[in-house]
Length: 162
Image 1 (cartoon, helix red, strand yellow):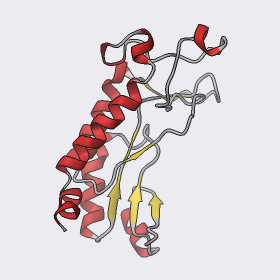
Image 2 (spheres, helix red, strand yellow; image 1 turned 45 degrees about the vertical axis):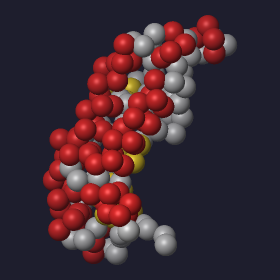
Image 3 (cartoon, helix red, strand yellow; image 1 turned 90 degrees about the vertical axis):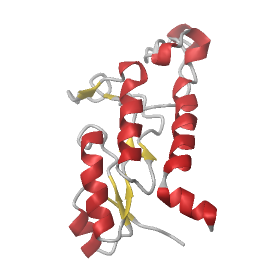
Image 4 (cartoon, one colour; image 1 turned 30 degrees about the vertical axis):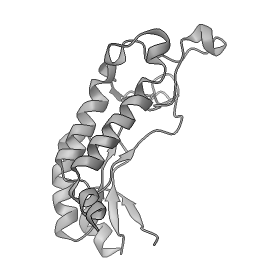
């Protein structure tokens, strides 16, 4: 029951190496504009396609990486989810694991005063939410998009019918 996914957009290499599927992880290099091509190539080789979505990326303070993908108050996350769903993805992965230094986190965020003075950004303004309502904005939105994916994905609908 174990599936092995290659973190690559080189679908031919993943197929040759015996992987079951591909995923992208890097949301800056592999934006939503590449998902349809990736999934079409993966499906042509009978591989699972699992593009990665993320809320944004900003590691300038944490590592000095100058690349930037602004969150745009949630619009970046929504656009990546829409692109993943439209691509015919079999799965959707989320690039976030409390990566506060990279700005990819979706875990709850409170203003600095409520977090003991840490200087990471809050989600204030995301989807028009402010204050306490904004703290869980990305988790709430993840639930929304997960539900949309489950209700529209041919793979998910097929497994429900079985």
